Image (cartoon, rainbow, N blue to C red):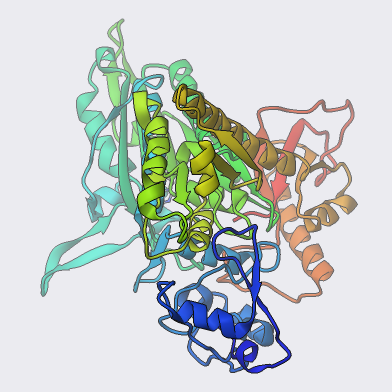
Length: 597
Ligand code: 86X
């Protein structure tokens, strides 16, 4: 309790929310302190002088943006946390300081813990469960539609093998992590930790593929990979070790392999949109932005409203015969000739969880779409002297049983812990993003009803729990979860759609970026890579001028320059005579630009 409240005689009453966020009780400070210190409550009053500036260091979460903190040191010192104290609420609003907000959300919701190696994070059960939901969703499709089998290849790769294809590794070499010792003795030849598994898997493809009868060969692995990056890391979005799935397939002809590329991309679209509620734009990467080792790259691009930035959600590559030639993946055709296999590769990472957090989260914390929420419904009993746990718990349990029985499959938790009061629990589960809270008080017990509170909208209503037809209650909650899933997606899509603007003249380009938009422009197409470079430089210059800044740091992960995100599959009409935004040449398509992560 704030010391000023206790000592200041002018303060006649303090207001608290003893049982319910929507009800306040005002009593004198003396009575309040006496009550809390009495046996009636489980805790004691601690008087804290809030006017004293806590000198303790900021936690790791807040340490990240030190520069920013120094710029607004007055603001941030107020928001530092005393060492050893837990945060009770987010210190930052999403719109106020997006990076700090994100740090607070992932820690308070217990998704992430920090670790003593930069760029590495602990995925706590709350985030790992989400990853398991993603795996479940995707495995059905990987094994079903994509007819691809899971497998596991080694983590380590020899230097010779990794560098077998120089061109493939070249640009990436600085990111490769190496093991050079076993115990104290140097290894005869160091081994790399996989940054991706082409060189690890493709020799196996070469061995196993001899005849057209061996095709298609479609393998997927779920694994960790390491890329030792030096840009600022951000949990989920850019970490040195991350989890992913990588699919690698080989086919007898290009028709079949290009279909695989599209089918894998459709799985990614579905995972983002139908599971995570995050709208994405599917399309082709330009020549400049595609995976250099392949023939063509497709992508799903997401949009982060608060930063106005795009982020690559996942990619699916048409490798053509490039890797087949490098790794001798040849097969005997049915007519007896020899042909190189046609390959694809596709990957989806834990970055997706970060995108989901950024898109749906709010000032109270995480907001989870029901389909990936580890707990979809939390039931909180409201206890008091007049209504004890012994009285109310059986009813809460009855409700929980109704929601879980007959394999209705709702993930329910009854929070019947006695060490926390209901207000604390509401806050806790709101921060963790649980889609539905069911509050059960004495009145609900008497009337056999329950109060339903929806996390993302704040909607509240009473629902009757009819003892003759409990399945009705379960159906209503199931339906509500589906509505929430659809509602979250619709809300995100509306925001995203309103931030894609069509621009046909260069003068409108940077102003559109400055308005946090992605920009669709007519474009002269693939052969003119230098014009993408031109847009990058020109947009950087004009953006810096608009922001009154002189230059950009080399280590910041994000730049103010725009790059192409994709050539969307879904193209608006291109009026005849449209000119490329950059070159002024005849436009052949619309291309999507944006600042990106
Ligand atoms: C490119 C290509 C591809 C399978 C995917 O995008 C989906 C899943 N792989 C990955 N890429 C690299 O090839 C690469 C190679 C090395 Cl050696 C590295 F250190 C980093 C890399 N990053 C990306």
